[in-house]
Image (cartoon, rainbow, N blue to C red):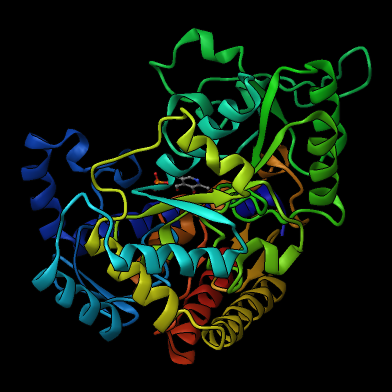
Length: 460
Ligand SMILES: Cc1ncc(COP(=O)(O)O)c(C=O)c1O
């Protein structure tokens, strides 16, 4: 099928299905009209905005969620990758109930917090860890430690990576193709040029000069950036698997080359495992790809649904928190989050639970791949344990600029189509599915069936 016809068809589906979604969600509309008076855009975070309003949820149980109209969906949104324990898991509920009766908050470290730190260190092969409250705090603190340890200011990040909303790294997260304006340009040395674009208003101008942006999967670009800024770069930070552009895996040898470049230039290698830690394998990136960073940041899935983050790694860097690098927080390691995190990591997300997640993930990816092949649409799937996605581009992606070539119209048609058929999806083409330990083969089959019908509708 020619692309123009496919795009037109996708636009028709998006229009019809979006209209259906609005007629099915009157209670969300009413809540939005109330919410917008006290919350800008009617939501607590810009990532929760909907057009014209979001589907508001009020209950989750097992692999299902219910919206405020009482409609049940199978949850493949997973709270942006948090809920791999599923909803209301008995072990998590029990741990939270016990904590609520005994210790909601002290701002004093408890035995549960210590046990959680031990569980995180064991699982992710860290020497030491500090517990924080979000992924943003985890990458912010890891970067501060790297700056303290090296006495340097600059940081290298990948174009298209999101590391939370603190100032230092909020650059070139989703630069539009026209802002880049340079996709096919080359500089005088024949290398594609990467600029540092702020992703938010309100970022101090001075920080633009401390953040160097390079393409993912290009170790040569990192080596060049470190050589060009010799003695000035504190850290290279990356998602070892890029997960805010669909999913892009590191190519063979890439992570090892980064580790070697960092060692050579005295730079701290930081993995942002906020999305992949605890989802792509029991031991996250280390287990899957085998290359160790100096420091890592975690959040999301390690908290069993509670508010959490953590960062850790080698003692020689972590000790800087005792030597003047400010690392603190009233709620750090609070008993409620620690109890939920500990139950998740030690009782629910056990090594064998990853066999279940792997089996379901592969079933989902293979089912979607079959539907894509049957319809002949330009797309492919990525399958990584509890995480996976459909990317609307025939060839796999290697970096952010490939992501700009995906056919976003197809995604925007799929979103309301799937939600209208009881599959709760992430509202954004950069996101992925998340499967939980409470999902079943029937749940996955439901996704595959709805997606298969969508692919056929695209070519009808
Ligand atoms: C890779 C990555 N790092 C950091 C963050 C920030 O985490 P949080 O939203 O918990 O602050 C996110 C959030 O989506 C993320 O995907």
